Every structure is written in structure tokens, then in C-alpha cells.
Image 1 (cartoon, rainbow, N blue to C red):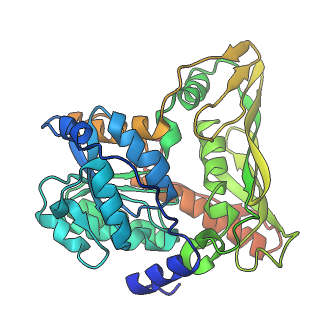
Image 2: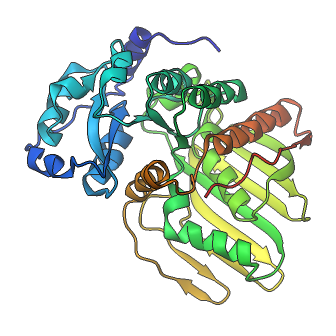
Amino acid sequence: MNKLSRRDFNTKIAKSAGATALMSISPLACAIAAKKDKRKLGIALVGLGSYSTYQLAPALMDAEHCYLAGIVTGTPEKEKIWAGKYGIPKENIYNYDNFDDIAQNSAIDIVYVVLPNSMHADFSIRAAKAGKHVICEKPMAISVEECDAIIQACKENGVKLGVGYRLHSEPYTQEVKRIVREKTFGKINYISADAGYRSMSYPAQWRLNKELSGGGALMNMGVYSIQSVIYGTGENPISVSALEFSTRPDYFKETDETITAQFEFESGAIGNIMTSHNISTNRLFASCERGWYELDPASTYIPLAGRTSQGELNFPQESQQKLQMDDFAKHILFDQPNKAPGEMGKRDMIIVEAIYESISKGGKKIPLNFTSGYGFGG
């Protein structure tokens, strides 16, 4: 796939109204200053779209082990707004052209890449070469080859790598993983995971542009479904077969609208996923020997909800992004387990490529073979 230049990217985002105007807000310099101590790691957000604006930045205001230290944006107007709101000094503000200068900035420890999928590899690798730890938003890249390049760059430069899989840090998902690990309901026979939403009101969004996104629903919500059936069984799949459904080819011109896929697991469990940009759904369900469990919703931001055949689940809810970024900071500071390592992101991209291959071959079953390095995170 052809790479986009940063100038082309900015032009495309501007034309697609991808850079929505931020509202003017009062400065919070005193709050951010209070966080700047040696026990906290400074994070620079690369890309100031809606996820950075409404989820990551507010979460960093409450994080215990990290704080918002810098930003990288191609929109000068955003520089002023973010500097005023978060008290970010001028020397910690970068654009896509001078990004590599971040190597000389000791205030920034972690670079969080929150750009369109086709730009993940470029900026993750450049961040690693700058000596910064890397969080790469999901999906990790648009190909397995790019995932390998990111992993290699981080290893060569001695930096940590995490993928923006926020759910591994939140309590409902952790409870599912505990149920699976302790075999609370015995063997899992069947598992299903659906993740989708209607994306019909914004035809110019970058997610519908294959050059930027690398794919459609599968590369967006589908990654959550893949993740769910894997941590919901405690196994990597051994095969997958898939089909694509298109009811609005006039709207979804370049990217997949709805995909279903079936997985086989070595234990004998059967899995099914559905993902869509035209159907609203969000659920994980597993049927076991001695009961069942479900999360519904399973992968939204708070609040999640869940229950089992033994009763309702009830956990305190707080920002998943805060928990995720604090967990990655603790991985760096205290050598705690990496809950979403780069190998996990690569594994999921292997599965994504196999799903697309199966679709191209009319639903043919594609074998999957993972080495011991493709586990389930800390």
C-alpha cells in the first residue's frame, strides 16, 4: 500500500472535515504543573482527533503514573488551544515535520500514536528511534510486515512497546480473564463477540478511506471482537473462515461494511464474531460446561456491564484510558507486566489478514499457527 506524505495526510483530513474545531476552554496549567514530578512519565499525544481530545487527554489529567507532557499536530490552531487548556510549554509542541526533534526532549518519555492506521508504523518507528517508549493505537498497523518493523525498531532502540488495548486494564474484562483462567464454569464450548456501530452520517471520515484506514469495520471494531474471543477462551485460534456482507456499496465504496468470521480452537471450542460499520452491537457471550458468562456492552467506554449464570457482575468504573496508560507507565517504571505488548498487536493483524484472505477465497478455512510469543498480555 502506498504511503501518504504528512502533507497529503493533512490535506485529506482537512478536506474530510476530520479535524473538527475544538471549543475554547479555560487554562488548566496549574493542574498539569502539579503532575510534573519524577514519579510520573510524560506522554506526548501524536494526533489530536476526537479520541485524544475527549478520552486520552482528560484521562491523563487523572492518571497516577503519567501526565500529558506534549502534543504533535499538523493544525496550528490546535497548538494554541491545547497549550492554553493543558499548560503545555511551547518546546513540547511539535508538528509532523519536526517530530524527530522530540529525541532531544527529556520531558517526554512516551509517545502515544493516535493517527490514522496507515501512519502508525511510520510514527511508531520514528518515536522508537528517538528513544521514546511507544503506545500505538489499535490496530497496530495495516499489515503484519509493518507490525514486525515496529517491534524490531523498539527492540533495537531499547524502548517499550504497547498497543492501545484499553480493555485489558478494566475490571470487567479482567474478571472474564479470571473466569477463563480458573475454569469457573468448566470447559468453554462456544463463544461469540459482536462489535459494531452505524457509521452512516459522516461519509468523509478517514475510516472509510482505505488508503488511510487499511480496511473497514474489521480494522476498527473487528479488532475488539477478535480480542474478545481470544481472552474469552484463553486460547489463540487455530483456523478462521469468514464472509463479507455489503448492503450499502454506494456508501461503503472502499472498505468493508459487515464481516462475520468463525474460529476453531484447539480445545474444541467454536467461536463466532461479527463486526460492522452499519449495525449497532456490542456483546461477548460464552457457553461453558457448567454455566455461562457475558458482557453487554463488552467494549464500549464506561459503563460496561456483565453477568454470569451465578449472577450480576458489579465493579467500579473509571476511565479505561487512564487505567491503560497507568498500566503501561507501571510496566516502564516498576517492570510490571505489559498488558498489551506489540506481539499481541501483531497476532491480531495475522488474524485480520487471514480473515481478508478467507473472504477473497469465498469463505475458505485458513489455518492459523502462532508461536509461544503470541500470548495474552500481563
